[in-house]
Length: 119
Image (cartoon, helix red, strand yellow):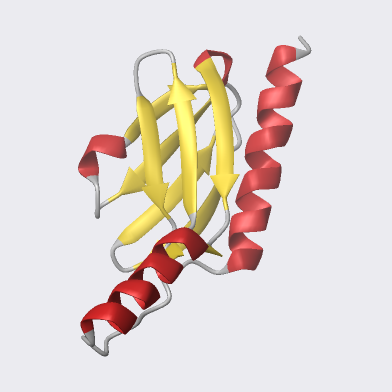
């Protein structure tokens, strides 16, 4: 039985261990997401890139303009990985994770899910 480990963060650890029929999530920042998940029971795996939330940013700017608060920020939605499993939905915050490692992880998840649905 071969397994492959992809480490997204070292502190606190966020790791994926891929086995033949399942993958394991180790996430000390959010122990509720930890567990072993069968590929055949995963319904969705979606990555959402970090992007600027322009609506909130503009509203914040207008509020600062009218109320002279003087504290305008650019609001960003963080990078997230959503995995929907038969039993639960998992949302992993990928803040401080290298994009190249995230890309490798997404490719690995997609290849495993595609191979399990085609069999």
